[in-house]
Image (cartoon, rainbow, N blue to C red; front, side, top):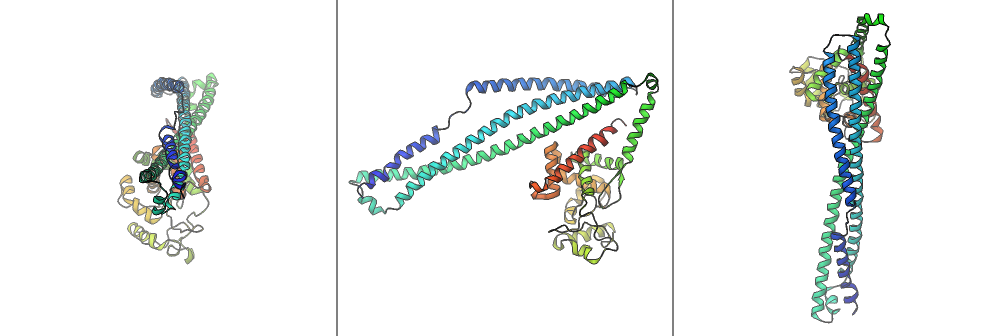
Length: 449
């Protein structure tokens, strides 16, 4: 027992010293000064290039506006296409600069996270050693500790050592908590950078497709014979015919009759002006809801059996009373309005094209009515449903714009809190594919008509 004082109590003093040195002085600078200066110079160069490109984009935008104001002619349309191609090419350059800058940021964030994780590991190792030594000390009684000391001065010295260990424990725990917090902050920032990079890359691909279409149209116009050029009104008429076909094409809506695409786009444009969500995405959500092939409003219709009625398929405490209020206010028969049937493990009762359950519709009713200009909106009316969808996905983050924000909003629209589960990814991917098709093949061709 006489060696206890020397080997057990005093030994942690050295451990504490090493630990404190590691905590406060052991985290060296990762990047050399020269690397920092090189990164800074490249950053300044990228910013200068981007500023120049943005000015050039502004010039091309003005050229486009000027050309579009001129009377229809072959020369005008070729000039418009040239300006559109130039603007798209500049947009690609700007996006590529952003991608390069984001790439550098992502590398930095990863390095920071790795260093923070290394700090946490070192702190945990030190903490484990301190806890072990503290437990060793705690296993002895005060009498044993006093008897193990040859004189009173050594006893108080050992008490100071013990207090130092306890203080070091507190410091170590604090460091671990702080580093964990910092790691989470850096991870969140890293995720945002990665999503921005994805958005930029998707935008580049869209600009490339725009250039391909514009080049093909330009080639077609330049290959027109002189006779065709003199009768350019025939080309204009052909474009107008295609635009009319797009507008009149039936746009499928869930649980209601299809409406012309032009009308659906009109409703979506109005909703977009109020919510900031682009029309193509709003219509893509509704298209997806129409074409899923499941839960398509085949319950509660006239002639359906009792087990498919609203009293059976709808969650009683959540949706039945709101449903009765909605149908009563609209003067509708609650026993004959089409509703979604239950899916496996869930409830049915979703209403109309936007597939809102009654309780959710009631929570949005006032906002929907303010946008469409009516006191009592109708979930089975296309305009009201399109507006409801726009408001909902805006609340889910779609109004931030960009591929990532829209895809996440679509997934939240479909799966709520389970939006990030891999099994639900198909919905977001399909909605974004539909949004791209609607934007590039239906909305964009209508510009100017």
